[in-house]
Length: 130
Image (cartoon, rainbow, N blue to C red):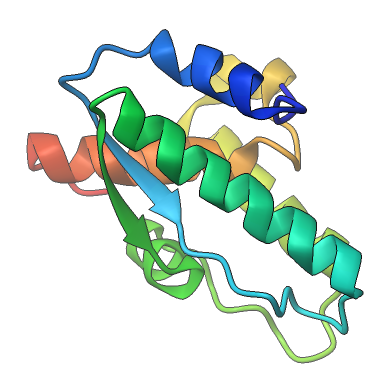
């Protein structure tokens, strides 16, 4: 599912979660792997701020985690020199499918990061290996 388009949509989506849960929120920066335009970096930061505010307003605990940290923890090999973003995302998608083969039809390049982040958090809270 895509990110809601406004603050109310983000808040309403997060309001559906019980407030006794913990969330990992990927730490974002203005630089997103390539030269980014001002508007795209602003949109990314704006969405990130909406998520943080909505989590806080709904009483949901969250922790920020860097992409390199969570990827290392779930066993993602670092992005290779010259590897395209699409190829790297394909590797993330395949790892998510390997961990959740029954969900293969709904795992996409757009959702695999979130699933792997959730997998890491569940592994850490249950004491199981990621």
